Length: 121
Ligand SMILES: [Zn+2]
Image (cartoon, rainbow, N blue to C red):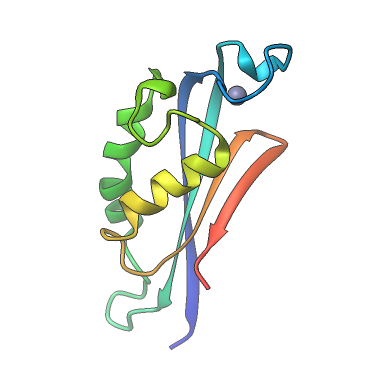
């Protein structure tokens, strides 16, 4: 069977400030984002079910982490004290990789025009 990729998209709203940038940098002030997270699973299509994985199962696994960040101040979340897109990718990868067989890629969009991703090699 062919190997295929599934992508499931999640959103959450959260505030942060970047304490590591100069005070005149706009990100040094507290502000919010509607973050978008794309979770990409790759694997062979199961012949019996006709799918790689149930989208609903991906949601069950990812949603608790999305909810743990929704309407929170990221600077107060362990691992996200410096809440860049890069560190959010790392945070999600560390949480989801042990739980999601076939996890291939995580994309964090901090705006519709700016995203960061990690792909397993
Ligand atoms: Zn920001």
